[in-house]
Amino acid sequence: MSIGNSPEDERPFENEHVEADHEEARPSIGRALQQARIAAGLTVDDVSSATRVRMNIVHAIEADDFSPCGGDVYARGHIRTLAKAVHLDPAPLLAQYGDEHGGRPAPTPAAPLFEAERIRPERRGPNWTAAMVAAIVAVIGFVGFTMFQGDDDGSSEANVAEGSTPGDSASPTTKTKKPADPEPSDSAIAAAPQDKVTVRVAAADGRSWIAAKDHNGRMIFDGVLKQGDTKTFQDSSKVQLVLGDAGAIDLFVNGKKIEENFQPGSVERLTYTKGDPEAG
Image 1: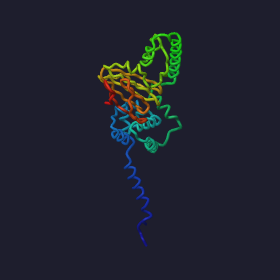
Image 2 (image 1 turned 180 degrees about the horizontal axis):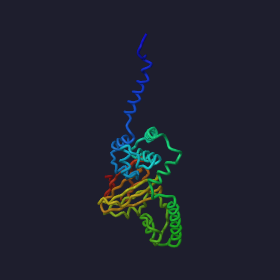
Image 3 (image 1 turned 180 degrees about the vertical axis):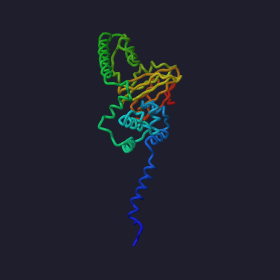
Image 4 (image 1 turned 120 degrees about the horizontal axis):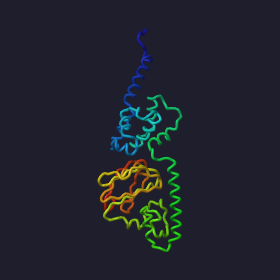
């Protein structure tokens, strides 16, 4: 008759050791985000600029400190955004956060709350205002076209390509292209100064955060382009760009379109100089 424990009695303890080893092998949320960021070749400053999440919050999350986030809803939103920026699937990290912090919170719409906190300047009110301004500009352009169609044929198209208002042009002639069309006109290509670098950014396939610096490293633009928006930058020798969602952007450098297969959601850092467009 055996006195000790049977093999069946010892199996639960072995399973507990296996589960404990598995938990130790799985990296923490912050460690996983940090490793993915380093593997992607990005700095904390790059991730902060691309996601609009403050650097101190990025540092805290990579150290598994979620208190600066301001609550579970914001913490989940930050984890989701940082994971996408470093090309990591956010679903396992969110599940791990739920396991470690008591599951999902009450059914609060996390994405709208987080989006409102992350991109403060963009609200619904200004969108309506922009639409009204665009409609007024279109009406003024049509009236100008009917009144001055007999004047110079080339001046209006050049002005439209450079972003001027119809009141600055003496003769807005035949308008065969919509203002939102990302392709530059022939007059715009001819008007690009040969002694400068001119970069045009068009949000053709969606919204994207854009940052631009001149040759001195001075920030000349930092903001979000909505789908259909364009922005033109010019410098005497060099323009540096950071594209938060490069897959949504069409680029034109010195009057020529840049044929790059940027992936949706990818962060791209680019430099362009005078002459033929070349990515720095």
